Each structure stands twice: as structure tokens, then as C-alpha cells.
Image: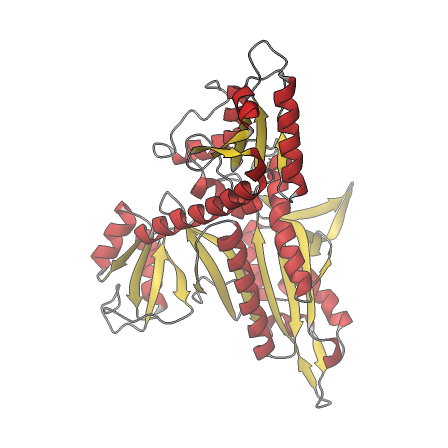
Length: 481
């Protein structure tokens, strides 16, 4: 593959340029004509569909239903939850006119949907019999990211799902928040093959307007953390702002409780950055749009009919077995060109079939992540391919887990914390007194924030890393996207 088509920089030498080339040259996404926006190309959209299918099926099994709410939100709605509004105001795109007529009230282009959804919930909920109300939304949101953009990671518009539920009490809401975080963990670790730290956000870092926020945080190769998914207990803040009340079994009127939660297409960015190599993408088999590509290799200057027909038969057997396989029999490209193209796209397994393979009733199977080649009997192609796909999925997670462990460092003093942040990056595991002043100082002086307060308290192993006073929590600091 030519320099112009293939990846021209090393991931180790220039991660940012490598990432951009992989995204654009693999056909995942492209830059849009409006600064800060991107085009999700068919190959990238098919990855998003895999993520969507996994979540959608399980959310419905948990009792959630999909709905859609308007893109435009009256400014007055945002102001009804003042803390929420002040947090999002700097990022909001506003609509101020309709045609040539100036609007009487500005309309926000959806930065998130809490306010417009909860206005409807106030009309729909009357009694305890209406609870819980479990609704999920697949949409896009807009947040002004003009100065610094990165495809999938930070754009002004992005696809996501956002769930919004209503409950009778805190206990039921807590259970919802925890169940959703576990679902996200399954997606991130078991489908995307990315290990994540689970825990709480501090009050300083939690979602604006939430009682508390739970999070899953992963580490990228450049030593920066990436927030992969969040689940929020919103308490009664939005219910009180939007008058979401219900008549309880006790015949008394109560304010309801809310949760919200979401993941976005930044998950695709994490897959690219964490698993990719100098040849391009490396897709985890469970989210790969194409799991296997079958490439016939006929004799030079010969039609190779037997080879192509055998390759077609192998592809069909794989498809019938539920494996996402395609046949690449394009005559206008050489086998080598095809190999490079599908490696760039990160297809987990390539099966090659040449005249020798046909005569021996075998195929050559190649795994993308390790470039290992093995000849197997054609009769075993389905069973061996399934085994290999499982092995690749496990191997990617194990490799990423080792990288996460190596990128996690303990710090007992402030000097140690600053040194690690500046030189190594990654997660810094440290003890904290829980005072916001220390949290603020560390962010101001190092750029690192508390990414996770572990769900299960870890043993305190030093004084507060910042002030030296008695520590109460072990937390994980990092710079982040």
C-alpha cells in the first residue's frame, strides 16, 4: 500500500497524527465543512450500530423503552434548574430567529435532554402506579467545541444514548444507577476489550445538578484518562424544578426521583487509540462490522476459477455459522493491496486461499492483532475461526489490562504526584483528605483531576497527598480528555 494510502507515522512517535490518519484512512470518519463537526462514514457508523445493538437489546430486556424528544429547548427550561443551566451555558448553541423573525425566547440546541424530557414527565406521571418510568433516547447533542477538536473524542456534535428514568425513592434510583453502570462495564470491557476503573465522581467533578455521579474511566496510550460512561442519581433536583410529583400509596403527594446515564461515540475513539497499531485499526471481534475477510489468491495472469469458487464457499459457510464474513474477489486489486486495506480497517481475521490451499483442502488463517499465520483444514474453518475470534477478543483485553496496570502509580507525597503527572502520566493512586481545597490545588497546579473514587474503599496508605493531614479516601488522579 502506498505512503499516501497507508499510515505514515508511528503510534509511538506521534500519537495525535497517527490517530487522525487511522480514523480518516480507515474510512471511519472525516472532517466536516463546519469547524468542530465530523462526518461519521459508513464503516464508522456500522461500529456505532454494533454498540447500539448491544445496549439496546439489554436495555429493553431491563424494561426500558426508546423515545425521541425535540432538538430545541426553551431557555426558560434550562433556567428552571439553575445549577444545570450555569454548567452548560458556555457550551450551548442558541437559535435566536425563525426565518426572518426574531424569536421571543432563545432556544438551546440540545446540549443534553434532562430539561425538555422532564417537562413532559411532569405531565405523564400522576400516581405511584406510573413508576418507575424507564425511557432511553438515541440522538445527537451539540456542545460548542470550536477551539480544540479530536475526531470521536471531542467534537461539537456527537451521537450518544441518554437514559432518563423516574422512581419513587432513592433506593430504587440507586439500584437503577448501579445496574446501568454494570451494563456499561459489560459493554466496555467485554465487547470493546477495554479495562475500566469504576467508581464515583467527587462533588466537584459530578454531573451538573446530580446528587452523585458514577463513572467508568479508562487510560489511553498518551497517559490521559478517558471518561467512558457515566450514570447519575439526580435526586429530586429536577423533579422539584419541573414539578414531577406522584400520589403515593400513602395517599400523599411526593416529589419523584430521577436518574440519567449515557455513553457516546467517544467509545469508538477509545477502541482506535488503545488497540490500534502502526498498520491501522485493530477491531475487537465482538464489535467488528467485518470479523473475517476471505481473499482468494489465484495464479498470476490466470482467472483462478477454482480458487475463487472455493473462497466463496468458505465465506458462505462462515456467514451461515453467524460469523460476519465477506469475500473480497475484486479483480482490479492485488492480494497484497487487499491485505493492507483490510489490515488498515482492523478486520480481526483474514483467510487466504490459493491454488496450493485448494489442492490440500486447507485455508491459511491470519490474525490481525499478532500477524500469526496458520494453515488449517478447510473442514475445520468454522470451528477454528470461532476459537480464533474468541482468542483475539481475550488477548486484546489482556494486553490493555497489562497496560492499565503499568500506567497506574502510587504517590505518597505531593512531589511524587507532580512528578508522575509530568513525566509518566497515567493514573496516580493517592490518598486524599476529601477537602475540595486540596482537589482544587492539584487541578490548578498539575492539570490532574480526581477521575475515580473507588466504589469499594481502598486501604489508606499515607497522609493526604496534598496537605499532609489525615487522609480518608484513596482516589485516582489523572489528566483527561
